[in-house]
Image 1: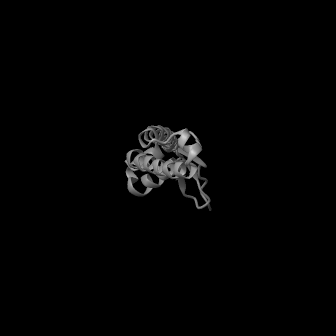
Image 2: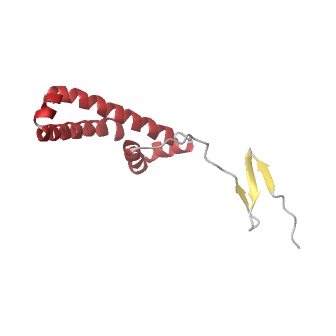
Length: 128
């Protein structure tokens, strides 16, 4: 004869639900966080945190702030890359006149500037 068990019990502020196997399981959930779309730099930061900075990754995840953090990093990286590109273009002498007269040279120089700016941002913001 089976003894009747309560479906739900609360102990120490934690709610437990009775499972089909007559064991109680805690009703634990991650806090609700924000849901931003994450871009290239946010995904790179996520991978870095997940594999190299596990403690920080878990803390952000359990606090419900991981998605917000990744979104902020992504936005900051895009803004920083744009700023660095504009500054480096001036230093490298990349102008609209060069674009009109020598488009291939302009593309080569712009690709170099973009690569350098992205490397700086990855080192300073994503892998820090």
